[in-house]
Amino acid sequence: MDEAGLLPDLEDRAAVLFGDSPHPAVTDHPPHSTDAYRAHVRLGLAFVMAGPGDVPVGFAICGVLDNALHLYELGMDPDHGGKGLGRALVETVAAEAKARGLEAVTLSTFTNVPWNAPFYETAGFRILAETELTPALILVANHEAEVGLTHRCVMRRDI
Image (cartoon, rainbow, N blue to C red; front, side):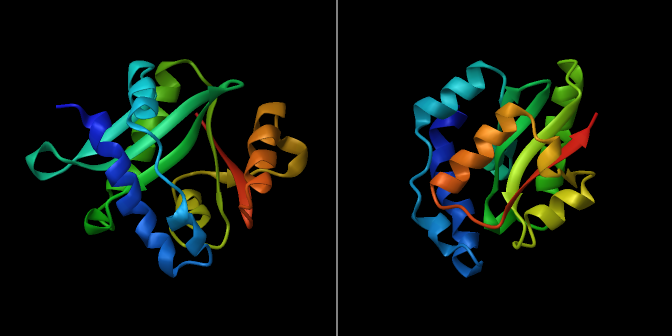
């Protein structure tokens, strides 16, 4: 099965959760292309959680920044939320970082959405101070600000 071909639809379903959040505009962003997902799969930087019938119900998309695996996006089908699958994906990403000999997992996320920064804190991440940001993380944060994302923080979990 071409899981990458199913991920744009899953990304759209996951974004629906933001409709009732302080950031409803997130639902207006188009999903990543199937080709973008395929590229991450080829690089070993896409992780998919399958549900009944082997249909994807969650995914994590990463990249290597500095000496860390950066979690660009974690998405879960709302019908499968609250079952620990998102946390399992985070643990899969952490295991991959360790297997690659990297020192941490990093991410940027909303501070005022319960399933964002507060969730990641329970998974061992901490919010980085501006003085702790690497040049690559500064670029990520600046890009997010340029596209209008607010109430963001950068987080890190040491491996």
